[in-house]
Amino acid sequence: MRHLKLKLLTGAALSVVFAHGVFAADLPVKAPVLKPLPAPLYNWTGFYVGGNFGFSYGQSDVTVGSLAFGGFGAAGGSENLRPNGVIGGLQAGYNWQSSRNWVWGLETDFQWSGQQDSGPRSTNFDVLVGGGTAVGTASATVESKLSWFGTVRGRIGFVADSNPDVLWYGTGGLAYGRVKTSGSASMTGTFTNFSNCEGLGCPISGTLSLSDAQTRLGWTLGVGVEGAIANKWTWKVEYLYVDLGTASGTIPVSGTACTPGCTSFAGTATYSNRFTDNVFRFGVNYRFGP
Image (cartoon, rainbow, N blue to C red; front, top):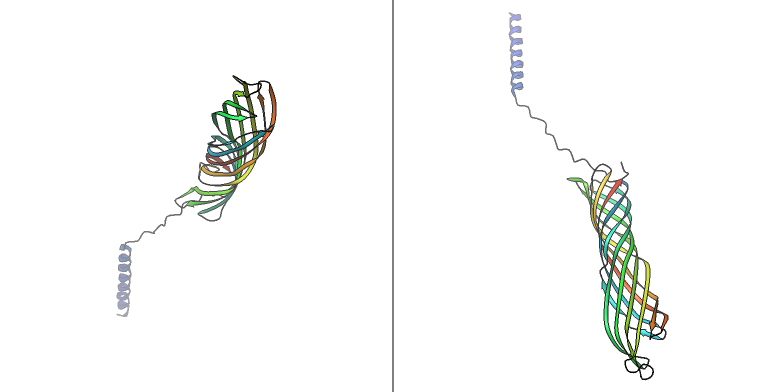
């Protein structure tokens, strides 16, 4: 009797365990929740070198003061020029990615420039000179040219989580460049007085030229975007505003005067050239980082 009770109790316990096991097996099992992995970072840290080409459109306000030569003088003038042309050059720099979204850098570049513009002007004159009257036509041309320029700039960039291989940045720093200012003028006419040039007068003519070039220091600000082409290569598009200040000074003037015999003369002129520039360029970099 005792053994029978033990068998019944054991069977009942196994039935409960089995039934519970079957019930538990029939319960739905939740699938694991997988969180999306963050986008892999493009590592911007490291040194880089590259090249660029583009177009620059500047503004050059040239003023030439009075010209003095051989005891005589001539009035100056001013021109608002727009030097523009193709540019090309090299750049090098270093980036440091301090966090997932921020990149700091330093870049230097050097550009060859084809920027230049000139302003021709002509006028008729009728002036009193040396006890007589000079009548004729005069023409002049003033030219402004940027031979080359460069910058040394800091950069601060932002990288979005959704697009980590594209860097949006602002930049600014030191600018320098070679600004050349030149001019030429010519005149023809007649000179009449009451001694040896009466009646139809004596023919007169003359030419003069001036030229000066200065390396100027200034500043630059700009924006740009840079993106990965492959692991080590990137492209970039950039705009810079460059201010090279004002080149000014006293420069030599040389020329000839004919009445009708010709003589050479030399003198001086004062000038100023306020030069600013707008630089648009596309570049490619090779990165030495990891």
